[in-house]
Length: 136
Image 1 (cartoon, rainbow, N blue to C red):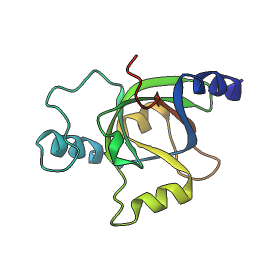
Image 2: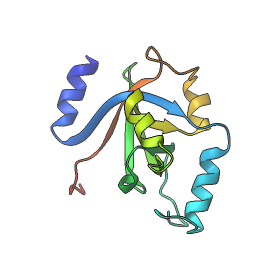
Image 3: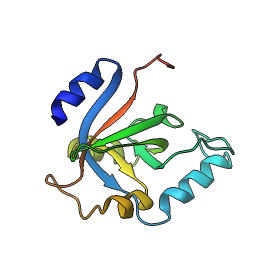
Image 4: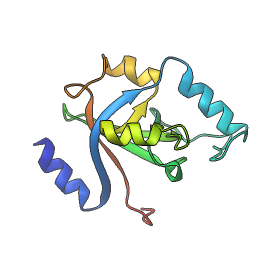
């Protein structure tokens, strides 16, 4: 059923499957504050849209976009605001891609979902966003 839903969603949305990692407590909130203050590339607005949480994605051009997570148990959760991205200079992008990590979530999502540990048997989901150029 999970794969059937993904195929149906892929017709209208950008869907990327893989593992979900997470930020330590308070880290994502600090990143959001720095981006809102405009102290880094990829700033976020002072007034954020209503979201259930924040994610980091491998590509920096996704900062500010909304995505949803379709967890392997069938729960569709979102929207999440893409608030951070992998640092290519320090090799984070390569590590995320090599490990099959499609997103890193904030600590509130970790506690809400009961996420424990990392590894190939844990935290599998699909990241769903609008296809490039779509705004509907």
